[in-house]
Amino acid sequence: MPATRRQFLGLTAAAGLSLVTGCSGRRPSATGPSSAGGLRLTAAPVRVDLAGRAVPTWGYGTVPGPEIRLRAGETLRVRLHNELPEDTTVHWHGLAPPNGMDGVPGITQDPVTPGTGFTYEFRTPIAGSFMYHAHVGMQLDRGLYGPLVVEPRREELSYDREYTLMLDDWRDGLDDHAGHGARDDAGHGTAAADPDPVDAVSFGGRSYPLLLVNGRPPEDPPVLEARPGDRVRLRVMNIAADTGFRFAVAGHRLTVTHADGMPVEPVVVDALRLGMGERYDVLVDAGQPGGVWQVGVQSEGRGGWGRALLRYAGSQASGAPAVAERPAELDGRLVSYEELVAQEPLSLPAGEPDRRYDLTLSGTQIGGQSYPDADPLVVTEGQWVRFTMRNTSAKWHPMHLHGHHFQVLTASGRGPVKDTVAVPARGGEVTFDFLATNPGRWLFHCHNHHHMEDGMLRLVEYEPRP
Ligand code: C2O
Ligand code: CU
Image (cartoon, rainbow, N blue to C red; front, side):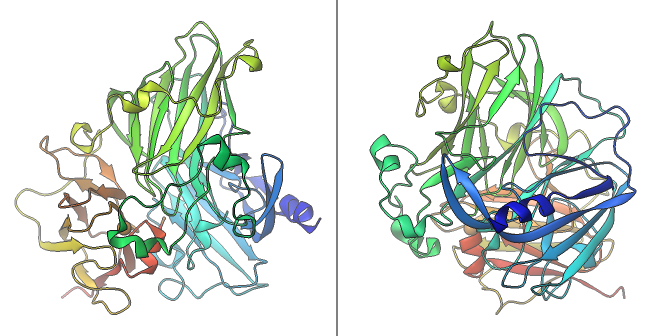
């Protein structure tokens, strides 16, 4: 199977970057990786094993792709090689590299054509939980994504082990198998009909039969190991194209420590809600005497179910909860932006923003314009810029800004620093501030990839200094 060889090649790491597969139970190493050498990512057709079914897709060797780990201040150096039949690029979601390394074809770089490559290289001064993914058309909707963790120089949190969980909605390769049965019978895992036909067109008439956690369907879930008394760090990431998620661990509460990789004052909640592109780091105290506990992942606003398992050392796998058993915590206290307080707020000057944009969001437009028939949102280097978004549509829109971190405006005046923020449907409003300190042309778009393809994208463009 060519996929096997490619899988192997996709994982080739030279000395330097430490490379851990999607779901590691290890603590960051004491010495840590160095920035020497580099990593090779090969974008190519692969097969994923979905509970015994080999499904064709595109990926970086595995789905998710290899976890890239480095330490704050080091240099990310990745050689992308394109073995796909079409152009591709890699975007480093949540990082703020120089514009030329941002991975947007036709805007920040030439597309990487089939059979060729491109080397991404830039310093990563800021620690956090990030993601990388293809940024051409709907490629992200296949398996072209992976986690990227930048460890701090000195870890402030204390914990015993950590896992990265990438949540995804999946349809790729299942098209030919319409009505393949088992999942519908089980009464879960099937995306229900869109409950809200108003902008159903944005879904392209597609449904997502499966929700995956680290590339695994609910029948074959990833298993997180813990000993009683352990403190476990979870980096939860939503890489779906079209699905917001609710996330909870049965029998355990979640202490939120980071939003989109940036530290917040710890908040204890029962459940997370993640728009596409958002990440939360949480600590889970393994306070139960033992057992196997459901880590439940539910689609927001429609059917669909995914899961992982939290297994205490020595507990019988036979004690695992049924596939569809739903943690009651999913209906408990939800994380909200209002409650999140940045530990490291942006250093905004006193006074008022230098430039403001008020932007209405519909399923196809931002500020009344649909890309590519859209004007750039112009900023000047050094400015304090404020975006206010009002969602007039019936779908929520997780809005993502490339190349910058922004601060969400909340009552505390110290809202979370993020790069993706979900604007609630039907009149929801969110305001954020950012400092224009990274010149170039940057995307600002809805991270629902169908909405983005339908035109919910604008360029943020730096004008030359007067
Ligand atoms: Cu996750 Cu335009 O990106
Ligand atoms: Cu949207």
